[in-house]
Length: 79
Image (cartoon, rainbow, N blue to C red; front, side):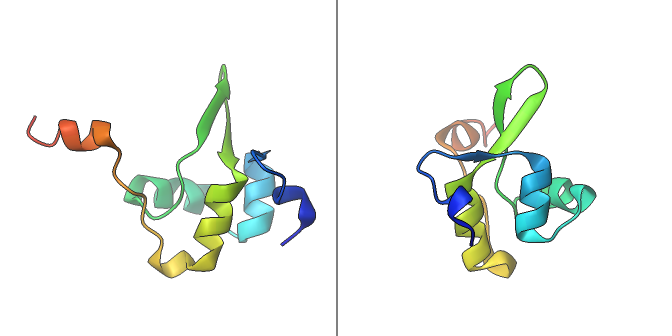
């Protein structure tokens, strides 16, 4: 993995993520919907990015990656 994504707190934009993980935009967003790809973080306005640490975790085991449920998600399971 390149040194550029090892910077603590680094955020990658979509095109960078596509290059690093080797997936297309549509596949990334489908996998986000399925819970098998890290969720993006808002950078303001309509801009989003991904934490480099989340992408590194994904790359360890792409086939087995699952997004951990947030406390907010669990709080609304009964709705």
